[in-house]
Length: 413
Image (cartoon, rainbow, N blue to C red; front, side):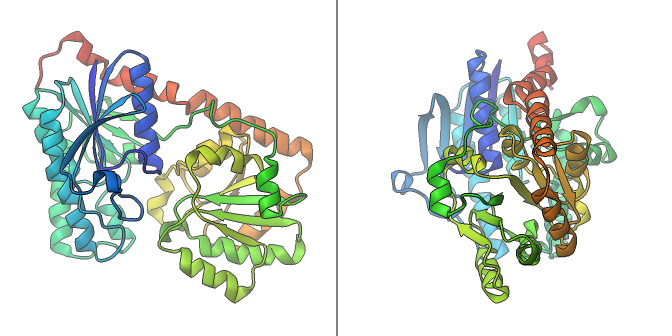
């Protein structure tokens, strides 16, 4: 089968969309399918295009065996919302050139957000006589409105009209979570036209391993209980409550340490909060390459995954859950809804009330005092759960099953 993957983000950038696209591409190519990726020049998260791409509008390359077409984008990591819109639209239009350079294809799978990239995916599918699959990882503009990012009512209405148009015109919709799938059904999409394409994990890269001595010594964590948050440090994560909980725990459990790995718009504020409340058991570290995360998990007792207490997030499945569980590290999930149910139903972690530092502190103390048998049970359950449901092989199996109608020579719409 000939498959084109359209996404604003792709490695060497790091993040959930980038990893998903990379792993799915590699798995499809391994199975003998023709795959091409249409993406922007690397720019996330710092808004800086690397020197090797500067001054260019388009470049073709092979990234670890994956054919990749890259085109220009106006990078904008921070600042006014209109600047981010300019960034979104710059790639929305430049990606058409990459599509012209790409080979014939049977299906175009377009990742949203940004929602506007769906315009490129839909028109390109028409031009190439291909099927258009809209891969929705976040409901937009609803999520931006609920987070207070988007407030202009006229723009919201226009975005909602575009959203409805793209949902209607897509051949199928691939959703990152069950919650998004339910949203599509409420919008009138037929059940057979909606399927899951969730975040997953490479279960060979992420697996239980011996503690990494270098990291233990570097962070002075020998003999400590380690709770790690690794990922984007943004408003949505609600990490101020976790730091306040860490301070409460410091008084009763001096053996516990909290490691925050990553960068993001809220990092400076969290550093100030740590200093203000003197949470000396909290250590911040800059982002590390994905290849280093197995070593981080090797010294971690519990992985912290946190979201704010917003109804929108009840349907979320943070991607950082799966590498931790695959590594045999139970998750302390500070959140509600779909992910909390997955963790509880599969006995792979502990749930705390989001943005409630007292309850988070209570659950941390509970985690810290678990005996070896109880901890091993959580660890084993988590590993088995993700190997069974969220390995990239399983996810690609499901993807191919849902686009296999193309193999039957159906007439293009």
